[in-house]
Length: 378
Image 1 (cartoon, helix red, strand yellow):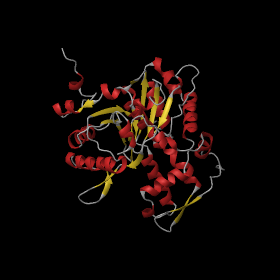
Image 2: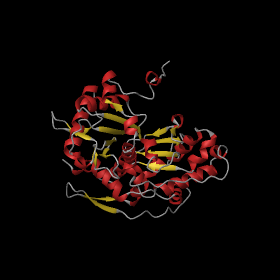
Image 3: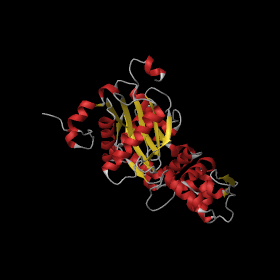
Image 4: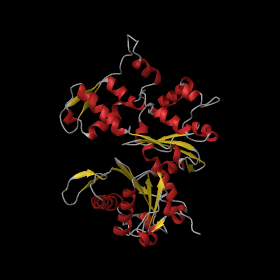
């Protein structure tokens, strides 16, 4: 038995942030997750490793979640989940089937005491102790933007797009295959390692110089990097043009006007006029994709340029506006988990959690989007 269980009067709640690619796990009131593991499951029947959310039916998803949670409890955290309190960090627009199946696995199979579901964007702001901010979450499969004002999420202004780390991996693969690299060498782990070790976001001026068609002499590319693949003896060359261009997909100019700066401005415009300045001055970028070198300076420059030069935004924003960004506490990839750990250390775990008795009464998780769950009596 771990030491903290014997000296604490009550067992600390377990905090889980189950993402598409990685899962953060640990205990409430701790500053860092105990572990960050891939969101994959080894099937007990076949021994095949697959992503947790690759499933055909509800029962298959239930079996995979049970296997995954058993790995978390008995291999990584080394605790029994029985009669434990849980905090689950989730996307507020996540799939209902995943939420219901996760709750069923926790309450029915593992016999937990209570579960508190907290929205990732709102709880991330709690790490800063501020009630207002525009939270930009750059995840693996998508980028989501949620304005929060005075502790209330403005759901009508929510924006999302499919560019995330997965899209960056696909772009790295496409460019490297075009240079002659054999595609079987470029596994998902190799692509992620190349992205982390070698790639960065260009400055606004350099990106404009590269995109300008009337320039006869483009700026020289950064130096190429030799990358050794650990699983074999192969060494591949990462050209400088690849290193600096793969993140341009977040800033591409097109007729859809759906690049990351455009989505941020449109999310702000969808909010009422009296909260826009507060959101402009309190942007909070989180998620594993936000850890890339050069992202925040480029994003700020892009936003300021659009505000100054784009007639659509110039007519709708008024006054001298400066975009300001919060620095995260700790690393951006577990900021939402840290908010859940803080929440689990407060009395919210007692007052807002779904208890086992309440769940077993209906075997249903109350949902903000379900009118039956939010109808007042009387």
